[in-house]
Length: 332
Image (cartoon, rainbow, N blue to C red):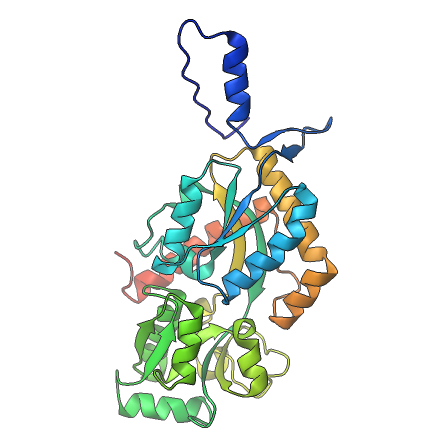
């Protein structure tokens, strides 16, 4: 049964044929072949809820470019930054179901149980997970040698050392709270909504450290400008075998939540549309172009999840993140 709600208001004199025509024009799709698969009449917008250049923007553009051929329509990418991704998600929800989708990342998702989101999860339906990837706490080259060096300063100057983060009540904050509890290191989080601002802040010495996904700052890692000191990963990352993981320094396993990026749509979107977009995601992830992109950003080999699996994953993450926010006093 369709999840889309179509309202047609007709006067008593309006013909049945006209009513049917209005109803038909109110959606983006129609049943295609004999299998009832969706066909798209209009472009399907891809909202990247963060600024240009960051990981959400990169994966949005990489996926959109490949999804266009699968659904045979344009997939324009629109950057709508603000409020740790809430602004862009709300923008997607204001569009007609079936004509817009949005990148959902771990940090935006976390704002929901934290009580800081401008939307609720029952307004959304999962389409696919595109990426699961490790994060890291990193510093500028020549500033600190390793985690022990950084931690020593954080202990001797509690609350003075700053860390660029994606936003308040994010997983970034959970990790910093866990570090304070287990390592006696007190950092001050400095939120930046624009990825480029976070990176520039570390490069320019405005902050002492940065919490970010390894793949999002690959160019700075390759150049040696950024140096990871802790890997927020349950396993070592190739090329960074000498960098301690969270478990190596005693962080609880529950705070090592993989950064994920996927696609969500309005919960009123037709089921066949969701299925078509989910299949297009799979085609995109399987393409040689995106396979190379995934490798460059350290995405896990099993990153892709279809609509049902991604929805189940989000439900599980909601429980895990809620527990962490409650533990560290970050939920309303």
